Amino acid sequence: MLADIRIVLVRPRGSGNIGSIARAMKNLGARELAIVGPARTRSFWARAMAVHGRDILSKARLYDTLRAAIADCTLVVGTTCRSGLYRRHSETPREVAPQIVAAARSGKVALIFGPEDHGLSNKDIEHCQRLITIPTQAEYRSLNVAQAAVICLYEIYLASLAPPEESGIQRAAAEQIERLFDRMKTSLLRIGFLDSENPAHMLLAFRRILGRAALEEKDVRILTGLFRQIEWYADKGWKVVQEKERKGVKIR
Image (cartoon, rainbow, N blue to C red; front, top):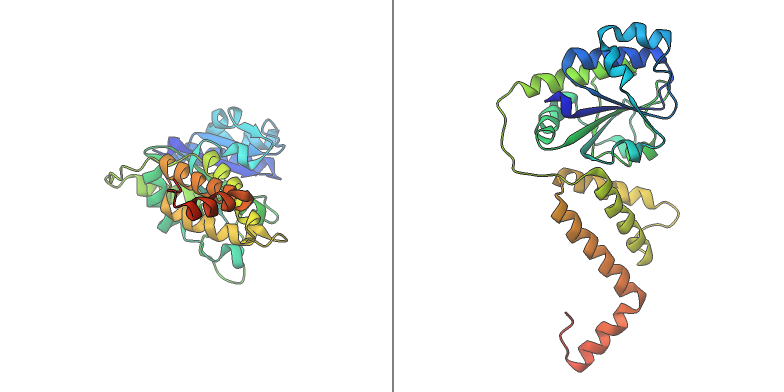
């Protein structure tokens, strides 16, 4: 089950942490390690900390962008210890783990961890459909990234031991959803619904709404068609509609 969960490290700073995460993955059954940005996966400390997880370390794939690293994933879950407007809907690993397991039964799931010094940026979080925050004491909330990975993987592993529930949902891949949001952004800017100075603010709200909806491919096609039609209407299509209404002609 955890073999279909991809651990994604965004701009990691410490090679020892990369190795420690590879070891945790080996312990708990995850197999895919993806790294966004440069990483020293062959360094002494990476290999030393990986121990028997060196095979995972050696097969780690490097990506230039987070979008590329999650392109084929059907559920994208980010991690954060910070508060703020864009992070207030985060859940605990125990709350999200059953949904991760259910999604992994029919597709690839990405679990994303940010850099050790400041975690995932707001730009990174734009790609996430769900957010995890590990409960800790308020006076010191930041965990080492390898510790955070162990906790999340452990909760997912426990959830995977429960009898499966058949959902019948075949989620759309992350890249399909990203293309939907590209289209959504263009069309909603065109009609003035989004603030041109900060379109990401409202788009994040849509991402949360649609992330909970577990979009299937047909859902993405329908929504893409809707936003394409909005663009058409805004770009002189309204004249066609008005003319057909004047003549009593069926619009579609």
